[in-house]
Image (cartoon, rainbow, N blue to C red; front, side, top):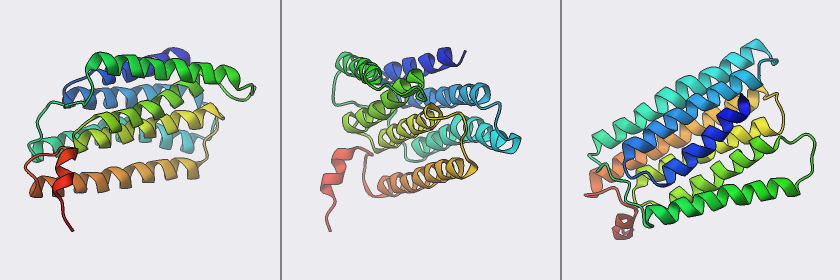
Length: 209
């Protein structure tokens, strides 16, 4: 069952590479949070109950509900156009993200470590590189925030790949890092919206000291 959820997560990476509307990005991030909730619930059922509850709340409340709602609020408040406006055509993005997944699968076959679950490893690395790709190939600042969230989801999966137990401190660090990053980037986007007519990365070239 866990493998099915992770494969579905990988499929969302392919889908987000060809998505054109920001609302689709938000829905995919929410769906990824739901998938991570399912993976955590199945994989971490033997750890401390308090720690498990914290992880489940982190995924279902923060990743699935709070962050997508916050991103939707930022888009609405700044009147950001609903198109993602990628630099590259969708077909090329589809090919690149597919190649990323294939490459990470090949890398996983090179690593021989009995403690490493290859499915987790492949999906985690694919998420990391796909998030970086989204950041590099999208014009809008808000999509850069979403790319970072995809990377963070990959880090979360990678934590599960190296062991079923996740200490409370690690989870607190992940949650704090995500919260502070989204908060700061959200404020940044809001301020940019007050100064510039659009939220494209290209507009940053007009900023002077």
